[in-house]
Length: 176
Image (cartoon, rainbow, N blue to C red; front, side, top):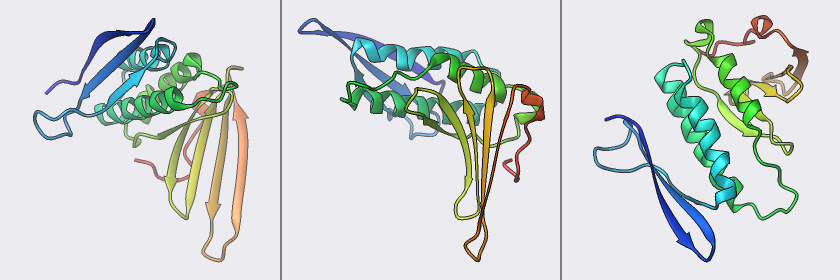
C-alpha cells in the first residue's frame, strides 16, 4: 500500500480545520494511522515539512519515521496554548533532511526529532543509558553537535561542537 495524505476541509465558525489521514504500510491492512485536527495556522507546520519530505532522497524507513515525527510535532503544536510558542522552522527541517540525504548516511537508522523553544529541529540518536547524539539545525547555517556518553560508574562525558560543513560530521557510535 502506498502512503497517502488526504485532506478534507471542514468549515466551523470561521475556522478552517484539516483532518489529515495517514495510511502506513506498517499498519494492518485497511487501518489508518494518525488522525490530527488542526487550525489553518497549524497547517503549515505539517504541510511544509511533509512536502519537503516527499521530495527527499532518503531511505523509506527514515522517511516514514520522520513523517510520523512531523505529524506528532504538528499535533503537539496545535494543542499548545502558550501565546509565546514559536512555529517550527521549515528551513531548519529542510536543512536536517538535506543532511540525511547524503548517500553515506542512508544506512543510518532514522533519528528521533525534537523541536527547540525557538522552533529549530534537532535529530537525536540514542542508546538509552549509554549514548545520546544530538544534531541541532539552527537558522545560522551551522550544525551544532552534542554527544553524551554515560559510563557504568555514572560518569558522563559531554562533547559539543559546531560546524558549517556537514561532511565533517560523523556519528560517535554505530547508528546503522
